[in-house]
Length: 112
Image 1 (cartoon, one colour):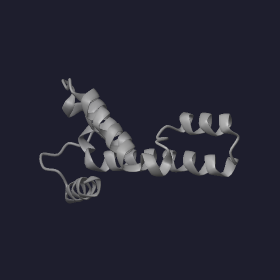
Image 2 (spheres, rainbow, N blue to C red):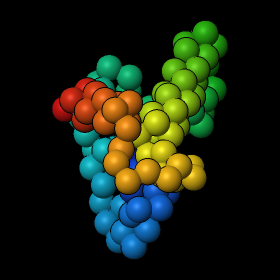
Image 3 (cartoon, helix red, strand yellow):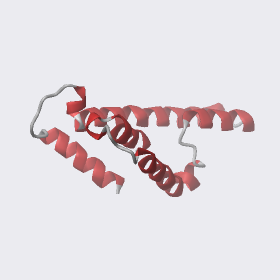
């Protein structure tokens, strides 16, 4: 969710004069910390996961699960961004495609 929001508010060409991207990213971090912080310890950054695991000498397989999940989520966010915002990748369309609309609807519903 964090990577998708960062891509939409800070990278998307359509939102280039956006001054509130820091607020949107901050709200996503707070929502993630409240929603999943108790489950995961609030580790939403692979570097933090590696650092916590190294400092506490936990098992390496736990750290690998966190890191793979975080990078996997980032890859999915990039794929969804490319499908939801094809105009940022050179597609010339007046109307969004059905696939773009369906992905946007799915992501909006999923994030609620």
